[in-house]
Image (cartoon, rainbow, N blue to C red; front, side, top):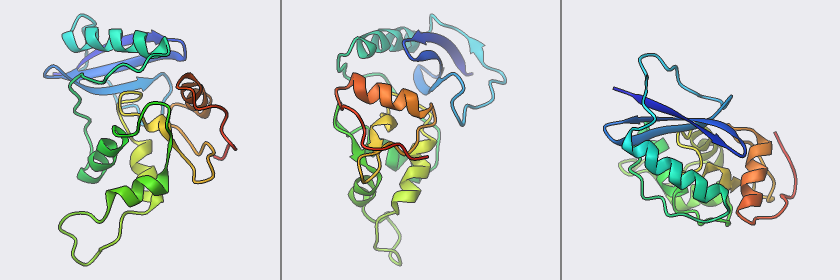
Length: 174
């Protein structure tokens, strides 16, 4: 059973989803790759949503709250590997797609391929991150320091980076 709740933030409305007391999604209104809400049950009092609400208030107040909510984003093994790496990007310290790709190394069980994934493959996984903010895909930038995309919109990405004290990005690229 998938439960859902709505949250208002300074950057717009967000929708959260959870199953088995675990957060499985958090999206801005209008965000790309938002799933169909068939069979979802509105339950804002669900415990993980209460904890998420407290986290969001703290985050948008400019604090760096620890992410201690249980997360279980649905995705492929590769996507989950990338998303786990994103969780290691420190608050206020953006990382480039290529840097993330190199840090992942070659996939396990692929003796014919001893190379890390391409930055483009990492970008594809980053763009499909279903748990915005808590899995900080907004902290991923281009090699030149510019904004290169965000499923929630470049304006939001820029605002989130500014909230974290990252300053103005070098360039905007779609």
